[in-house]
Length: 518
Image (cartoon, rainbow, N blue to C red; front, top):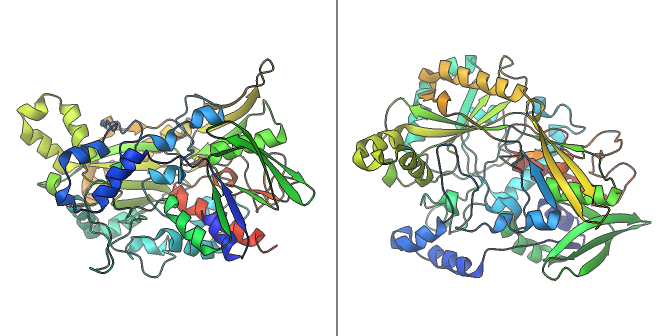
């Protein structure tokens, strides 16, 4: 969507080919009905339908759904021929892709984390601004702004939960000590529309963020589609699975098939921009190059989940009006821990955490309800991320069965033992700083995610100043190609720990803006 937006601003004609799977009509009608009423008027049975299929545990959520539906994941393995071994990375054929179920966290990179890229942050800066004008942003001008510019003049403002406020107050009292410990903190930056008075509706703090907000205040790229259709010469064609592309003189030929009928389809264009996500785009490029049995490394940002306990219980968290996405960011820039930024997102109480606590306590939750309330009032979750240089990788190999011609894109984990070492350092550092943080980590509950678990992955065709085989130039074109541009995470030379979506959209906007002028 960011790529198409830039091309339309250049005055070009854009046709978007997309699989475009959408929420089931019955659930869509329910969401529409809820969006037209206040949370106090919602029927419990309707809200429960939005929560279907989400079975949380202290170890996390197996697969995040949206409005009780798994449609963002549906049919992807079948159409893309995926086979996985020790990998949690998935692909999406949904309209809006995984932005339909993401956590909406938005943070740019710092120069040190992209020093291996052939482009610089100043080159990305104007495109960060353009993207945030598309998505919107709720954030605060705090200490993080010195390290991570906002790139937006007037961000929205969301109310912090009382648990987050307690942690912020503790950290504010020890600001200098944390700074010397090289821990920087501030409010989370999220692509949630904040209310701007009675004339400008926004987040109502209904607490359903993890299940899908019925009002549409959490940004999803599908929301941009109607804007593109009004912006210029734009056409959207759903139900298309693209399989390969080929440059022919001054044109690009595109092959694929209809998602529902499997009928073969063929298109031509002056330029092609591949933006399907790292798995589909890698598959398209490998097929186009006829590069079978050639393993390509997909770089990943190691994900880990660490529960922490507040020093003091916050009462009545079950009944608090709040948003349930990330509340706080902690950024560790300590060379003794890692030469790169370690990014931590703090989540306070949500219905999912409450259900996980009840599940962990079992019968005790009913026999000793005060124990559940004590845990819920203290428990927060940290989602942590490492730079890809210190994380495991995923090897992607396109294989073709000589007997029946069937193609398989095999994803296989390649472990990096350094990841566990760095995470252990992070946990020890947080334990040492527990008093200043106002919360203590619970290392016995630490969970290390499999490669791809957070979907912060890419780099199978990395950008290089002088690209070689299976690399791309700064326009995302594979070596020797001129009119095909990969614009998603596939071309990132490395994956910083900070949130991936903002930078992927930004680089896509940059590539489209620069190539669209030619």
